[in-house]
Amino acid sequence: MRLEGKTAIVTGGASGFGAGIARKFAAEGARVMVVDINADGAADLASELGGGAVSCVCNVADGDSVAQLAEAVEAKFGNVDIIVNNAGVTHKPTPLEDVSEADFDRVFAVNCKSVYLLARAFVPAMKKRGGAILNVSSTAGISPRPNLNWYNASKGWMVTATKTMAVELAPSGVRVNAICPVAGETPLLSSFMGEDTPEMRIKFLSTIPLGRFSTPGDMGNAAAFLCSDEAGMITGVAMEVDGGRCI
Image (tube, rainbow, N blue to C red):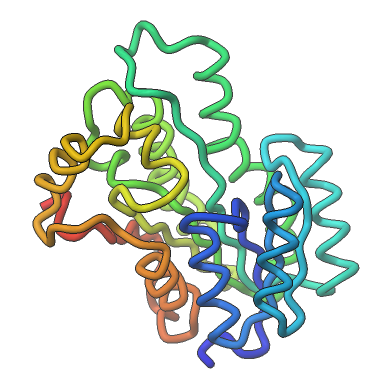
C-alpha cells in the first residue's frame, strides 16, 4: 500500500499503459481518477477499480476541457497528489516530409501541449503541498526509429520537459519524472508498426534484448515506484522501461 492516502489522476487511463498504471495505483491504495476522451472506457475501468475510483471525460489537448477536469478533481478529491501524463497519440510510419500538418498538430497537441495544460491547472496547488508528476515518454524519444519522426520528437520534448519541470519545482517539493516504455501490447502498437503481422512483430522484438514487448503491468510497477515516497530522492529521471532497447 505504497500510495495509501494519495489521490492520483491518470490521463489516457482507459486503456493500454494508462490502465495498467491506474490498476497498480489502486492496488497500492491510491484513489484514482481515470481520465480519458473515451467516456465509456474510463467509466468501466473506474467501476472495476472500486475503492473510490472515479472517471472523468477530458480532451487533454484543450484548455477548456482541462479546466473542467480541474473542477472535477476539486469536487471529487479536493486536491491531487499525483499526476500521470500518459495520454498520447502517434502518426503512421511515414517519411518526415510526408506527415500531414493535421497529424503533426495532433501529435504535439496531445503529447506535448497536454503536459503544459495540466501543469497550468494543477501545479499552483501542488506547490503548496508537494506531490509527484510522471510523464510517459518513450524509447522513441531517446533512440528514435526512422519514419516515426515527429512522434519521436514529441517524446524527446517530453524528456526535456520532465527535466526542466523537475529542476524548477524541486524547491516546492514536487518531483517530476518520466518513464520511457518500449513498444507494448497497447492500442498504439499497430500504428507504430504500420501493420500488425507476425513478421513485423518479429522485427520489432529483435531490437529488444529481453525478447518481449512491454506490458501495462510493467509500466504500472515503474510508475508506482517513481510516484511513491520510496522514490523521494528521485526527480528529473527518464527511466527506460524497455527490456534493454536503448542499450
